[in-house]
Image 1 (spheres, rainbow, N blue to C red):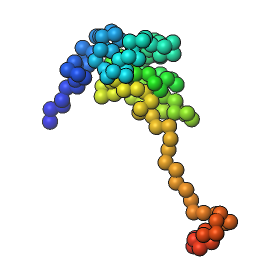
Image 2 (cartoon, rainbow, N blue to C red):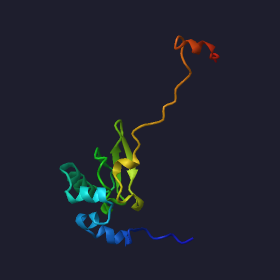
Image 3 (cartoon, one colour):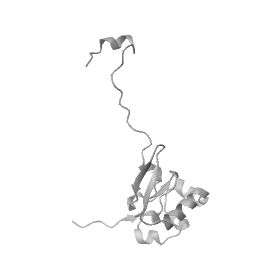
Length: 128
């Protein structure tokens, strides 16, 4: 089976990685394009610099709203979900999304059976 080559809006990964942030901003959807056109905020600039510098180790960050740039592909990020850092490998299909989309902040709640004295109807629940 032949593996299909990754393309984002008609550009290969190598072409995307050769682009500047301003050139890449023209390819993404309007919300992210306007965000990148205003320029990266201070925290995002620091994250990009750390991602360029660090090799092999996860880049720890709280910036869940950072747009995934082509230069992040192949890097490992540890993204904070409010309780802990969740390790995430960046793959080409994630380009143009935000880091927080891939780390869930809420988990499923499963309630147990009602306790003694919870409500009047709970006295008819069989005890196990």
